[in-house]
Image (cartoon, rainbow, N blue to C red; front, top):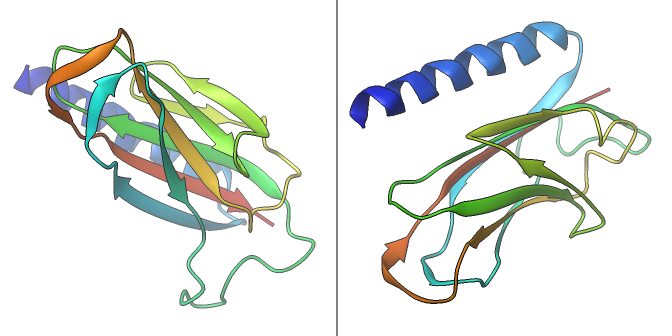
Length: 142
């Protein structure tokens, strides 16, 4: 189990490096969070990710456009979790298959709007123990 987690981290770092190299001339914002406790299966939990205004340069300027987005999720436990990455609420979403997703589906949209990771534990009823999901979203724009 520990070996698999290390491989997942190495894969995510390699994918992030590839995205960064592909968008070297772009500006980006990144945010990492841990979800609130998920106690029941079948109930979606949304975690909000947005640019932080205290960054050097501030929020993305008006007229900026997304060029790529990368999101990761990580959790422990023997449950099946369906996750999706959504822009500005649930207006536009892409599924996360495995531990991460790289997407150009949001290209051209406003990078100043929030993204959400929406996690739903499959099944019904209360979980044996609370589940926490660590997530990260990186948005490149110009």
